[in-house]
Image (cartoon, rainbow, N blue to C red; front, side, top):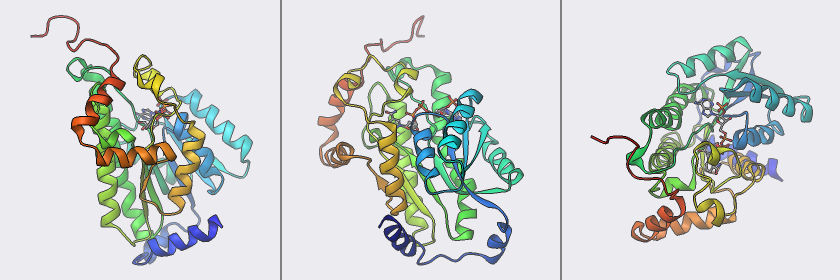
Length: 299
Ligand SMILES: NC(=O)c1ccc[n+]([C@@H]2O[C@H](COP(=O)([O-])OP(=O)(O)OC[C@H]3O[C@@H](n4cnc5c(N)ncnc54)[C@H](OP(=O)(O)O)[C@@H]3O)[C@@H](O)[C@H]2O)c1
C-alpha cells in the first residue's frame, strides 16, 4: 500500500519534471545515496536506519569518528545489503558541500536525498550567550543548511528526482526565550524549505521539513538545558518513532511533517494562539534559571 501511495505522490510531484539527458548520462554506473548530516546519533541515526529500509546507500556525516563507525556498523549489521559510508566533517566549514561532493564522486555515489539533520542548540538568556556558541549555531543550523541545499538541489532538478529533508523543530513556529537563537534558526529552516518547495513544485524533487517536539537524545544535555521545565513537563518522543513518521511523510510527498499526534496538535495551536499568550508559556518552559548577564564586567 505504501509503495502505491508513494508512486502516486512521485507522479504528482514529477508532473513538470524535465530530466536533462546529460544529467542522467552523468549518473550512469553511480549509486544514489542518502546523505545525512548528523547521521551518527540521535534523530539522524534513526533516520539512517529508516532510510536503510528503502534505499541502497547512505552517507553519514558527523564530527566524531567513533560515533560514525558505531553507527555504520549498527546499520550494516541490520541491513547487510545497504552500503554505508561515513564522512568525518564539520558541516559548518565553508567548503563542506565541496568535500561531500568529492567523497561522493570518489565512492561512485551521487546525492539523491539530502537530509539536513545536524544541528546544535544554545540555552540560557541571549544576552549571556557565548559568542562562539552563537556563531557555531548559526553556521550549523542556518548557513550549512542553506549552502548544502543550494549545492545539491540543481543536480536533483536536472535529474528530475531526489529530495531535501530538513530537520527543524516545533520551536520554528514561535520565539523561544532562553533558546532564542536556536528557535530563530529553526524558523529559517522552515521558511527556506517551504519557499523552495513552492519554487520547484512539480519538478520531481521532494522538499520536506520536519517539526518534532522534544525528542529523547543527547541534544538537551549538550546545550545544558536538562534543568529547564520542558524536560519535566513534556514527554520526549523516541528518535525511532520520529524517524519512522518522518520517512513515511517524506515518501508520501508531504512538505511539512509534524511527527506524531502531539506535534500535529501543537502546530495548530501555535498557529492559532497569539504570541502574547504562547511566548510567556514557552519562556517558563525553557528557563534554566541562568542570569541574563554574562559573568564578569559587562561594559
Ligand atoms: N532532540 C530534540 O528534542 C529535537 C527536537 C526538535 C528538533 N531537533 C533537531 O534534530 C536534529 C538532530 O538533533 P538530535 O536531537 O538528534 O541531537 P544529537 O543527538 O546531538 O545529534 C546531533 C548530530 O549532529 C552532529 N553534528 C552536530 N553539529 C555538527 C556539525 N557542525 N557538523 C557535522 N555534524 C554535526 C552530531 O555529531 P558530532 O557532534 O559528532 O558532530 C550528532 O551526530 C537537530 O537539528 C536538532 O535541532 C531535536
